[in-house]
Image (cartoon, rainbow over all chains, first blue to last red; front, top):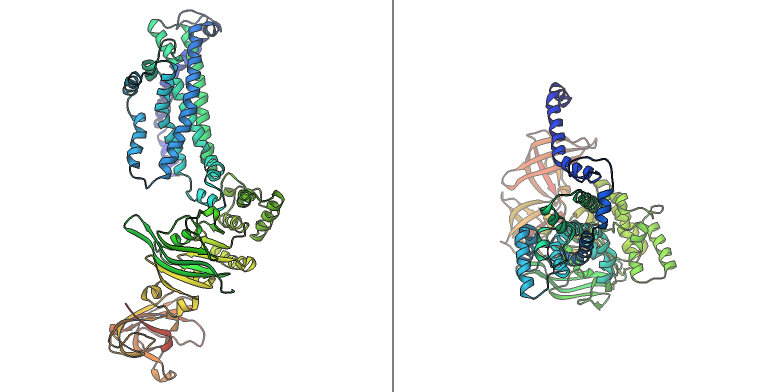
Length: 270
Length: 358
């Protein structure tokens, strides 16, 4: 009651807070809205509305370089996601399992490092390493670089899931005549699956979005979509970029929502 | 109980790292068909002992035998025992039926046989109708029953229970205690039950092993553990107890701090410093020693405090340097009432007092 009376006595505070909230949202989302709206504009000038048209989407799909970049992106994202999800999950299991292991703290820190260090540093490190071991810069080097930073993200998500898992689960499986492999396959894996899928989708998103690292370790013709778009912007901003951005935005939103949905579902069932 | 050993521990020791000795040289024989409890405070090694029987931990030293068979480093899935975990550890992605049938599926039992035995086990723990429920749609007591059915359906030679009632509220715990006892009778297998609750151990067990700091403090039937504790630890851990410092005056007699000489069970030689242990329910109050039957122990005291509890009266009786006694007297109409300041005589039978050395 007291709270309600307080709120009623100062309605203008509520109103100012509400306005502030809307301003923050506008600041964040209006530019995005502008990009989306003008991607459907018929005018060749960015920022001038020339009536509704799918012209720029049509041109985008006809742009051979852009389509090649999209293929590169999907190829790199697919491989780096699958490999980093498997390795990241294995790493998370290893760290969680051998708690009494000497040097676990070190392993932990090393695993978190790629998340913390700046992209540029990571890119330079990887570039130097690739030249040292004679890996030709191209799709392969990009995939390896994406695996390198994605393992950490996957491992962190899976570990959060493992931390919530009752260690007695696997013991119960063993007690009920399951071999180690059966216990993993029938009990552990299904229970951490939301984390594995969530981590995998996160890896996929990060791989599709990465510009800094990819642009340093790419080779001729291996530019991914975001790197190609970044290159285009340096020359001129065309409504075609709006169309590309809109599609990338849609793809990212879908992936992030799916990732969140998997992790949520896991929390409920866990 | 045919006396055959179900589980035999010989010199079992478990060390974690260099410093921590969780279980220290334990010799124990659990008989076939027995309801056997491992009782002790947390960290006494009772759960580690159970886990070594299950194969979830391996002894640093010593041997674990199950029905005469050396277990060695045999993993849990190769041992003829099943465990009810403290957290139940029900698989959240499987329903009740699937949980209960898991062990049979892993053993590759015929599907028709699995269906029959699962239904039987679910019936045994009275969960019929809940087969398709998910574990987290069940109450704590129901989850506990699923865990029990999941273990029993495999017809283990020994069932291991790790504080299975710890998470339940008092009322449910008492119901489940009786039910567990009934189920044990029905299936007729050996139960090894870990608990820190001495009352639970006393009411349910055929025999109890009291553990302290990794060692066995005493093994015996509940009456022995309660009535004749062999150490001050057991005396203090199991049930309520008065502790009176003194020394042995002569065989069968103890001199208390105030100089009073009382008769008590003791195995110590004269002159040894001992603590006289006395169960509160063995104490009675009288107005003077002339009202007492002969051959009793008496101590003179004064009523220092009285509290009315409805069904009983509580008196605090001050006996000078010996200490003060909290005495509960049931409120029967024939019972005498005392007032603060009254002189009373505390009476206890020599057989109910045990003098224990440190």
